[in-house]
Amino acid sequence: MSEDAGQRLCPAGASASPLTPIVLGTRKRNQKSDAEAMNARPVGDLSVRTSILIVSAAAATVLTSLPAYAQSAPNAGLRVGILGGLDIVRPGSTEDSDVDGDDQSTEGVLYGVDVGFDIPLGGLVLGIEGEWSDSTGKIKANRSDPNFFGYGTVASGRDLYAGGRLGFVMAPGTMIYAKGGYTNARLNVIAGSSTTQTDDTFRLDGWRVGAGAEQALSANTYAKLEYRYSNYNDAELAFREGGTSNAFKVDTDRHQVVAGLGIRF
Image 1 (cartoon, rainbow, N blue to C red):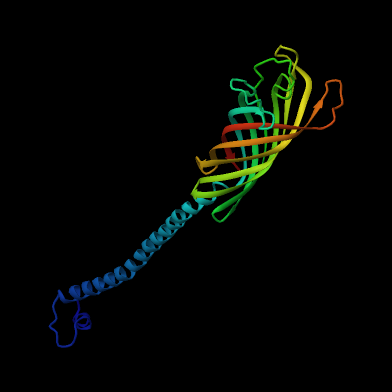
Image 2: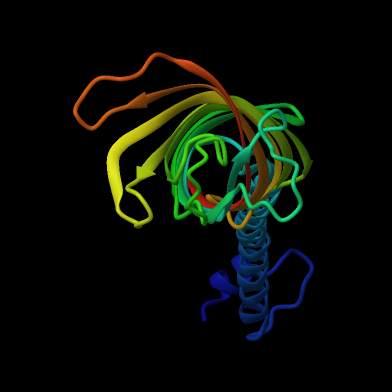
């Protein structure tokens, strides 16, 4: 190395040494590397911290929305379901013979479908619903007295119902409710002492009230159990040859215990 080069690399008053330029050059390179490292670390740390914040915010959003979804999804919107249970049709209080052992009822298995729409109103749920059901119930005895059951020998036919319900949300997905509405039922006349049903049919109009509980099984499925009482007070007989009788008053009760499974959309 030339003397001029050594003087340029050494500060004034410092002794020139062959090692001096190397040491000074190394320090400069180290200082540059340290500065680069200091400048680089914050960028990396910022990137990691930003990612953590984004992930944390997303997780918090999901976790926060889950309870709200679990609370709002059940008991709301369009629903359809299947029904099954016990069906009992018998004379009302004004027609009952009140004789012990006098079987005046038809018992059978109820089966059917229903559809409804529920609107949440804070802790309440307001809904409308319709139902089609049928029953295996038949009168067990054959009496010549037409007042035995009020209709002679008959079998339970289809039953249509339209009404509303008002529910109270006990907990997310759990609701108790009361219901009420209009019901139109049929009793199919059985020929003589046989089990063969004719085309003659009693058509009954009445009202229904009930109460039950509904439990969400998932975000869009549910199960329910309810008791319903119906009373029919207007009737007419539709003949197989065509035409109907004049309307007449009746007093017929219906008791049902029904379980249901459904899905919401």
